[in-house]
Image 1: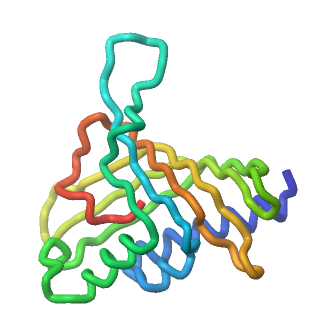
Image 2 (image 1 turned 135 degrees about the vertical axis):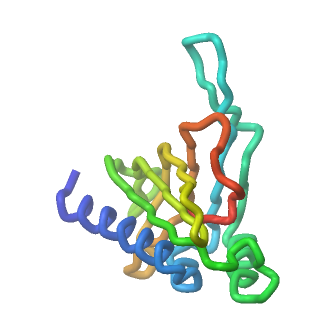
Length: 166
């Protein structure tokens, strides 16, 4: 893989994390392709060692750019009580791999994520971690997130809600 390409896509993901950590959600929306699919299938605990423990037919979330825009716009109103006071959050992204996609200027990108969030003066922090599979493409000279599938490592999510963006 071209080191410059890997750098550009890694930088895109780092910039995305910065926008989310600093609650710049409207700017984050600009990174999303209009045909975005954003989903998080359910992970289950199974006794069998072979096969997948992901239930792709069931999701914690399955969104489009339109539904994410609605969620973001709500955060700028007084009815987003779950975000008041605003939580402090950090997105850590690592183990980024880039492979050619199905279309020119489109790439399959895998990464690991660690998300931490604290609220108010609570001692406890919430965390999620796992793997993401993205499709990132260049549109009119700019990188855009065209697809994201989030695979949390936890079968039982240890967060109060799913108001965050991963």
